[in-house]
Image (cartoon, rainbow, N blue to C red; front, side, top):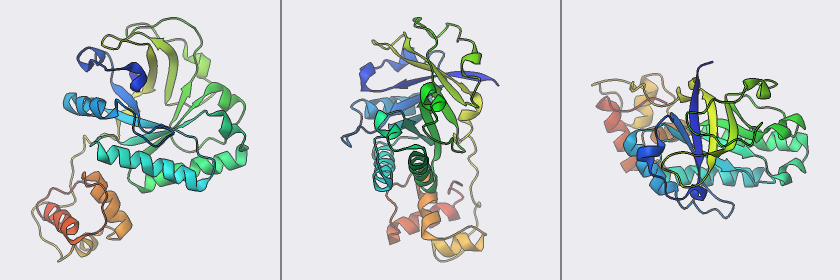
Length: 274
């Protein structure tokens, strides 16, 4: 496994000078929506800068949900946050660590997590689960078939970006994609301690280096649904929602204006694949 270093940050880190903080970092995870439903106070400015410097980043949502309706609300609230702020993330990490979740029991929590993952996937994003090592050891839930990001801090050492990571045997019991190994990292450009992780570099695969489109310079159909069907693509409303989201069109509702724009992009060879 080739590993890359990653930061996860929120308003707790204050205003970040990404000119310096980006050095040695390949991936960032931003806190999205709070328990109140409000967006993290630094989310918009971090998104703006990360877009400008073209740093791959995703978001996480700390889960408080106690039932199916609430987990769907949390996921949809996170997606709205992403869309409203022009975030170019590809994955939503569900943060499973609140004590109230353990009280649900293993079966119910497993179902709740899978429901959240399904909602994420159906809306065109990749999914992942973040949780603590103790949660795994105590078997709070059955592991879903998505990347796992584990928090385990074997030492109280203060790290910087150039420090060696601890021996990975500390988390070898699990098939992890990411390991958050400290909450005491000092990073240039950030005034407060932050979390530092390592990830399998394959976590970056979903970022849209592939700019392939559905077709180029051809005209099919009189509607976007018919045009997609003619080239063998599902033209249903649900799939058009995913395609619209992939192409930066949030809150797609199937209006004539939205459909004409999708059709224009398709005909001009600009409609990006999901």
